[in-house]
Image 1 (cartoon, rainbow, N blue to C red):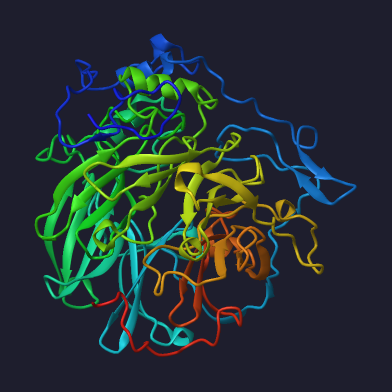
Image 2 (tube, helix red, strand yellow; image 1 turned 180 degrees about the vertical axis):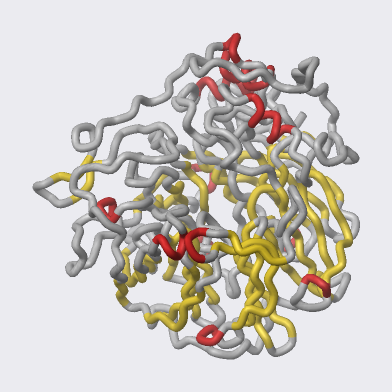
Length: 594
């Protein structure tokens, strides 16, 4: 058992926040005689839920799923101000209703301020989300654009004339069809990747994270036992793979290690590994310690999200020898572990308990400006409905809570998803936000919060970023009218070349494109520029994720190039706010080579 410095009231030292390999009995599993889980009726009651874990979670509280608000009555446009009034709470839905005052078409205009478009590339491995990774080999710079079953490698040495040099798996072609080349095997793909220089090997090392699907398997876990079983017994890796890289292309890589995040069952084969696997891009800078977002086993299931069963915590691995990664510790925040009385008590204290909607736990690894082996002592954990945590990581084998803050519940959509540390060392302030998951503004607005972290033990929400507003020549007065999803996503990743820029931060903002903020004074952010692309046509996406417009931004701070990733392709951008762009590889390669 590990101690807690700060936690929720009533949670004592008996709550194990860090478990370092101590075995615990697995929860009972349902084992139908015919091997097929029975399908319950649509009106779920405790006796209708075959999976014992989902049934135990359901029985902890009563059903508080929010009712569906009425467009134009419970929420909608304010005629006097021309602004949108968001609903107070909504369930997670696949198709959100429209409201009076929305456009009746997908806006084909684009808008920009202090931004120039250098090029557009119509490569889309997924209309919902992609990851990016940049690495320099020789005198060339390469960018990996990918999402699970689709990968494209581009030579972006000159971003104005980037070239696709390798492709595998799917991409979205005309009318939403999947154009597949050299497909990945079933339950395989290209995992969320981090490339760093490893001094011991004297070469680049790539870590790829693998997880169970987060959506598309089911709609409501308490009604669909086959979906629950599919996640619990996913036939792919739940964990990560490590590759030594002798060049930019996959045939120049060597697989040197594979690990499951199910540390209690390290030798379990595919299909028997428990937990979620590793979510998103591993937090690693090439040194000793790597941090992951993961639910390591089927005890981490105290989450309200309807179509996902896990609540991820944090995991630490020793990467001194990348060919032999060694498990170090597992962290859980109060309110994550099913079957643990203290965790269940903390879960029930959360005002979101029972809403069958909110995500609980992390979606990304903890955020830090420096790894513990580089002298880092504090990390920040965005754990959605559980809140934002300041963590003492000085001893990675014993992660402790230092501070905590939460917000007024705002669901659907996820809360406290991303943390931006670009101004932390300069000012002591950090930025954190959730993001929308329903289209048509069918949920509360997701603010970007300015958090005073000058004393990590006393985290405090100090301000909010301004809400983007349309330019004067737009045919709408609020971005909610533009249709689709509106709100912040993320400000890039720690793998961005140069990582940060003092006084400036950019966010992908879905139907509001990329919004660039002047944050020289972090408690008074100002919108300084933007690029809002057109919506795709049906011929480009076949209507797939039509409203999921700009879901990613990735900035080359060492070359002053901004990449915007959309559901119809990606854009290379420049801005005088960043500085004069460079169209060759920089003198210092990325990632850094100490």
